[in-house]
Length: 175
Image (cartoon, rainbow, N blue to C red; front, side, top):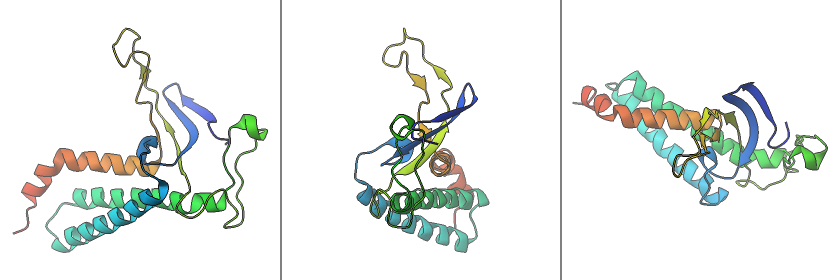
């Protein structure tokens, strides 16, 4: 697919090819190099926490799964950031490329240096459009973010940990 091409699966679900330089859901407020370093530090920290949770053997499997999903998602986005730009030509909209998508090239012949690649996002759920009469959000799409599996793993697991934090740690508190 070329950049911004989309395939309608249902009226509320599309495969929509886009790339971002930043964090989950296309947020970008720091450079990709700093974001990659942050991801490496976060992955290391979460691996340490996961190790402690597993070796303690008193925490639920749900907690282990949540931390594992966050780590896997962060690693997935880090791999895109590190290598995608090294092994693919730049993705451009179809109008600029005669419908020719980015090409896999020899390592190092891509569009970016190490730590400067973009992250591929592809899931788009435009569930509905807010009515125009609503202040601030009228006419906007509800949940207009485009994301990937890694973003979903991180986000769903983080929400799970936030929602069930007290239950997880009160029932499984180490003695």
